[in-house]
Image (cartoon, rainbow, N blue to C red; front, top):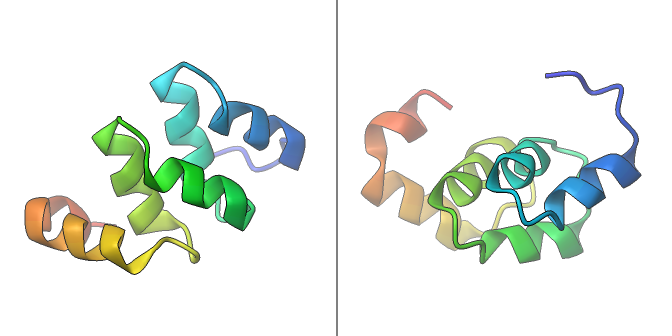
Length: 77
């Protein structure tokens, strides 16, 4: 992933209506805690899984949900 984008760009992605852009934001470990909380409640499961696998501030319940529901995917994070 290209991490040369600005924090503002990732924040805009996190607020986007496009799931693909929210997935990009969820994959960036520099996303602020407030946006992590927002993405942790995202309707798109892939956003939540990426957040659980790739963000150090992911809520514990996302890690557990990912482990229980998507074990093969989480093992490859």
